[in-house]
Length: 219
Image (cartoon, rainbow, N blue to C red; front, top):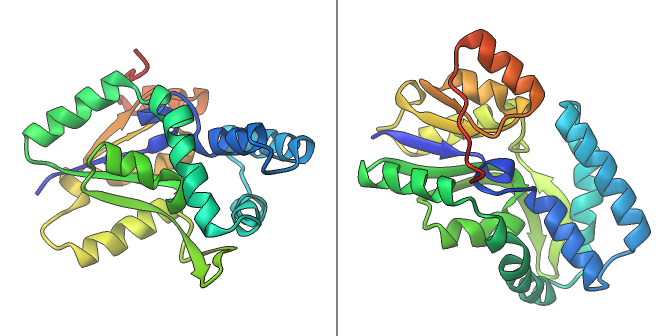
């Protein structure tokens, strides 16, 4: 079966779900505003520049999850999805989802965002599978650490191959992958049908050199 793989932030969404989550927590007085805004801006600039230290970022972002009880986190996430995420979903992205669905393609969201934050959008869009950064969990909630390869950069390829091993009958040679970011270049190069969308400047230059057609989802 054919795979249609979609990045989440700045691809399906008009914006970054992690940043929106932190902004939501600030607005609802769940975190230290000054520190979180400063660190969030730093990590976002690192990500856009293609040199994010994912371990450093995860220590910061997942530590926040560790500081709030899981029962409260789930209530906050529900509010966050309605308030922040739903308005960011690109109609063009939903149209592309439906195009692939009508062709009986397997729909996957593959994102560096952790599985807790992005799960609601996957359920809302009725995506077949989610491949995201996995978080450790204990009886008390999230530990503040991830496990396995972060679903970021080369990690997206690693985790995609793990998924393929568990789901025979699919292959990257006939897969589509939609992404905006130079950080996703490894997976874009691994699929048969790379689809750069809403691209950052670095990916725009690479796309031109490779002859990849650039798509826009933000209308």
